[in-house]
Image (cartoon, rainbow, N blue to C red):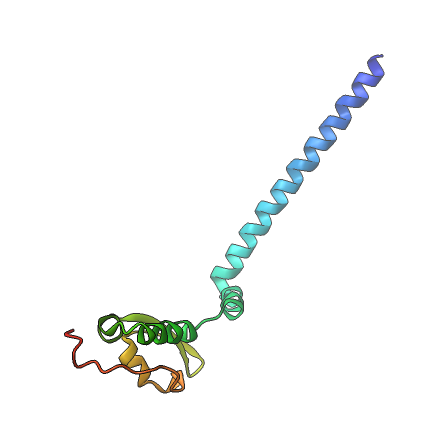
Length: 120
């Protein structure tokens, strides 16, 4: 009877040790990824390429929605953060839809509103 109790105790110790090793391995992996990302930036560039570095399409869609609803003040006066690629670098600007419509990187896809009556 005593031998069975000892065997179960050793099996329990083995399972606990395995769980501890797995947890420590995951923590080491997280720390290595963090260090790699901070030192080289390669990992962050890879993630940015997957997610997308620009938001021009979404801002163009929002501006066209404003023209459809005739929201003159929002279109002409409120600045939006626009991230676009210029010379292989991401550039961030705050632009109104009117200013954005004049930029070449939008490809003329923004509908225009007369901003004279906006009162900005």
